[in-house]
Each structure stands twice: as C-alpha cells, then as structure tokens.
Image (cartoon, rainbow, N blue to C red; front, side, top):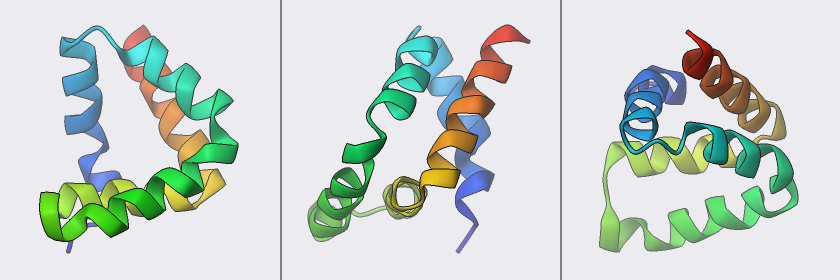
Amino acid sequence: MQTPRAFWPAWAARLQHLKLTPFAAWLLEAGSPLTLLGSQVLYFARPFIGGEQMEALARVLEEDDEVLAFAHFLREEASA
C-alpha cells in the first residue's frame, strides 16, 4: 500500500479541477475537531466504497499533523 502522501498530488489536482482547493484547505483547518470522526466514517464505509485512496484519506484524517500538512500542501499547490 502506498503512503497517503503519495495520493496528495492527485487529490490536489482533482480539487483544483473542481475549483474547491481553497474551500477544502479551509475545511481541513477549521474542521480539525471533526476530522477524526470523518476518518472513522471512512473506515466504517470501507466495505461499501472500498479503495486504497479512501483508506489513505482516512489515515490522513486520523492525524492532526497530517491534516494540517495536507491543507498546507493544498494552499501551496493553489498558489503555484
């Protein structure tokens, strides 16, 4: 399995395409108390939605440091 950071460029590109990068970065930073709950929902739904990327996203949402690092990554990608 790839590390979650390996998926970050693809996620950032998708958010950029949907023009949701600033909103997603803001939501990650502002919603940090709820990210753990979001990760648990993704783990619970894994049998139904599956996928390596969903598990990677759940692992990112579990760790506050990773959430903030991904938000920073999104902001850097948006400004590039």
